Image (cartoon, rainbow, N blue to C red; front, side, top):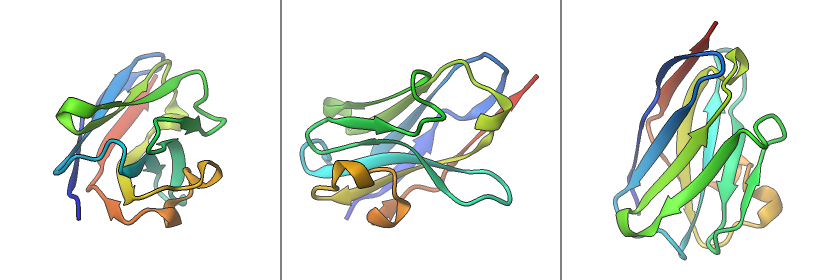
Length: 126
């Protein structure tokens, strides 16, 4: 079992940047597949970025070339660097994890994940 705690959300202007962090309660690199998801009011939860046990990453088309997912193995922390933010990125952002391998094509599927954090709010305004 692993507990996940997100941080780093906030309010920014269009074009701004934020870095989200997800602190895990145990070592996850090499053993857990992880991902970032978001949910806006009235919308379904959607995958933003995922990273496999081997470090391979995938992104939703809407954030490709703007967002970057990474891991700090020593700190058991997952990051999401978000650049050039727009109002469409406004949502609650969640970190998720699953022990074991998630097929690369399913890393952005919320149903693949077992553990979830409480979320951190990102609001982008003009």
